[in-house]
Amino acid sequence: MSDTTRNWSCSDDAMVESAIRRGASRRDLLKFMLANGVALAAASAVFGRASQAVAATPVKGGALKAAAWSSSTADTLDPAKASLSTDYVRCCSFYNRLTFLDQAGVPQMELAESIESADAKTWTIKLKKGITFHSGKDLSADDVIFSLKRHRDKATGSKVAAIASQMTDFKAVDKNTVEVTLASPNADLPTILSMHHFMIVADGTTDFSSGNGTGAFKCQKFEPGERSIGVRNPNYFKGGPNVDSFEFFAIPDENARINALLSGDIQLAASINPRSVRLLEGRTGFALSTTTSGTYTDLNMRMDMVPGNNRDFVEGMKYLVNREQIVKSALRGFGVVGNDQPVSPANFYHNAALKPKSFDPDKAKFHFEKAGVLGQTIEVITSDAAGSAIDMAMIIQATAAQIGMKLDVKRVPSDGYWSNYWLKAPIHFGNINPRPTPDILFSLLYKSDAPWNESRFSSEKFDKMLLEARGSLDQAKRREIYNAMQVLVSEEAGTIIPAYISNVDAITAKLKGLEPNPLGGMMGYAFAEYVWLTA
Image 1 (cartoon, rainbow, N blue to C red):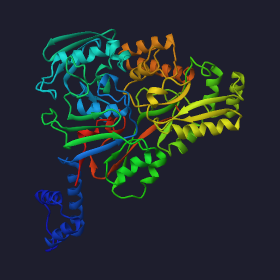
Image 2 (image 1 turned 180 degrees about the horizontal axis):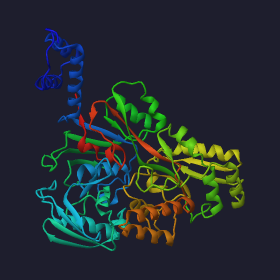
Image 3 (image 1 turned 90 degrees about the horizontal axis):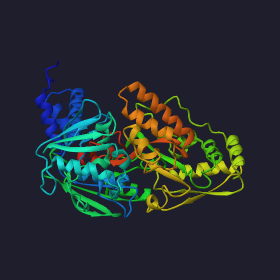
Image 4 (image 1 turned 120 degrees about the vertical axis):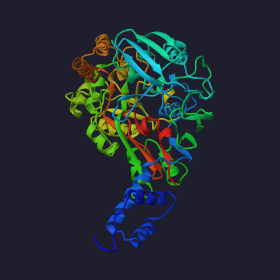
């Protein structure tokens, strides 16, 4: 080492890190280090280490604003009734669950201190102590029992009533301990309790407009179909959040949503359509946060309505869909080919041996002729409310025209789509957010009495297999059953899942701490609690 250079210590690293936090520039710090005998290469390395440390350290303060793509007057702060990502984001901000999923999809404790069972049927839930609701009320076993039981009450209208129905008995062992008994064993209960719908609310709550939870933010304002504003909960048991306030609203027009990000009006523009990514290409100060965890947009043919009640029509549509083209053109590569069932390749139980229906216009035409629909005009409802649904519809329509099949693609507004068209129109698109287990996906979407049974698929065999897999503690057996269930859905349901879509959220480079999560984009919709803003 020459006389003009010297060793650099950890305390010196800390000094540079502190200077960066105060706003010192790279140029000034390099000049300072060179003047103090540090070699250029070493100085650059020091600056890099310090910069990374600063970037990874949460900064307190600031007002976070983010925009989703869809909202309606049916927006709710009732976790049981939440059905859109817009609802999930708000519920994650104002409430907490007993568990949450980490990046690897492993359930971690949140309100619960522990969840244990010796037989997967009777579960003991111990709560963390010292947690309070925004109202000042202490969290207790009664709140947990009330929150879980209300999903079983038909008057609640819970979106997870079918899943909650397996919880048959609830008992408060003491103030901080709950015993839940299931109708049959289910080893997935800790994972199930991480779903957004199973947020814990205060015992006896009937008015949810104030968002009285235990969450990181207190609800200051909630206007359904417009916006919500949350302010930091100073008594939050997890110590966060980092930002002082969080405003969330929807900008349905994608160009307007991206422009709001570019102009600095918001720091996150949620769920950017792949075709719009080009608007951000080459721009400094912005980034994309990509999560591929099981989100999909599907084409649904109700099997209890014309023309979906004709099996040949459904088969024809499945052969008509060019899945590879949809991934390449509609999704711009942000996705992987799907095989018409909801368990994605990101899931341990995904049936990789189940191949998607081949793209075969001749076979499609054969089935359409057999169904007697060639020459007829068939209406297909689509909307920007379901990600990439319009692009998918255009691709399918163009292919259909080549074989003489007339598809009338009707584009409807995002506002009101989920209440007026989804689950109701004979042929329409849906958009499903990731769920952590096959049991949850099948219970919500394909069980005969599933609340979101998009194609009205009904199979006693499938329902029995669902119960069998749920109760088995044999991992290999469960996988075998779930693989067979995926085959049944792919071959017999009236849903076409052309691809599993990557969630792409566009963010300002000043937004830090955003990480992928198996529950979907925006950090599994819980980003507001964890992210921070740099100067």
